[in-house]
Length: 474
Ligand SMILES: CC(C)[C@H](C(=O)O)[C@@H](O)C(=O)O
Ligand code: SF4
Image (cartoon, rainbow, N blue to C red; front, side):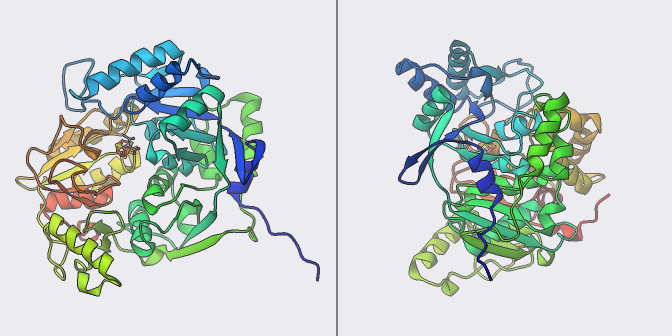
């Protein structure tokens, strides 16, 4: 029998199409197709570029967004910004104008969270390389892009040259077999993955998410899945483009049209992993067996199924992990062995680049329709983009949320991270669709439980962490 070489992964294929030159020592100079900037980290990057006397090589391939420091509270102001945001918003406007970079500014119907807007507008495409000085750039893997977060210095290099130097990544495939059951979503899947293999389970890898459960997901759910690849320790994650992806992109404002569209589709169809592809590592999880997941601790791996008790540090495999669990339980004010479901909450948040797209809002609204948020629970929903907000309003979802007692906000990162201005009004325990439950992430002393939009909605109604499978939808 002759030896056949191993097949290739989708990551190899995207990578190879972007090699400018090999630099030796396993370092490659890659072409970067799109650079995304936001006002929180963009000004420092552009200031560095200007100080070095450099200019963008391709300003038309760089897109600026206003998201992190926008004040999302209803206001009559046309220019709503958090107090801490003024300096970022103003300097981002000045720097991008000077560099000839377009910005989807406040008041622009395309404004919103960078990782929501860039696929929605067709700026990020399958098989493209995309960088942004933001750790959740991996979200964009959901449409089959190789996208990753960078630091300021790399960002300057990228803007000045439209290239970046990268070491060849380890490639990992994560398969989710079976179909998700009712009430269980991509958010539950990725939380379960991180719980099972740990916050370093992806160890700097480029991950392809594959398997039946992923194939069955709409693009928005794939974006949710890839969003948390970085919380799994990965360099990035992606889903190979397929018919679902291609249909989703067709007709979006910045997507190619005419004969360019046909050529693009032909290329995107080639971006698959061979069955005998040479993976450095493979993991799998049975998606069909999953229950809704909720975090109990202060990192996204400290997660249990909704019907499981808060874990006991005594069962930790080593002293270091036991100490970490004890610290997390103290911060979260939870007792080991008690059921997590039923824990009273004081606030509920639906939003962030993880879970603020139209299907996320629909899932939450399906739980909330005809119901009210429990007395004393502060409930906030922040659409991921101005376009998502408009689409949700067009189908009346804003009324479902407000009738249930939720605040219906403008688009931005909002309370996904504490920026100083907005807060939960003193609420300590929050159930949230965001991606980070670190100490203080949503405000000083705030205890965050990460969960899916449906679980957050069901919990808001119950006033306690609740199993959405027991809350019939209408
Ligand atoms: C402010 C920004 C640099 C940061 C990130 O990189 O992720 C933020 O988006 C976050 O989610 O913590
Ligand atoms: S929504 Fe949250 S996680 Fe996403 S980019 Fe904004 S601050 Fe970061």
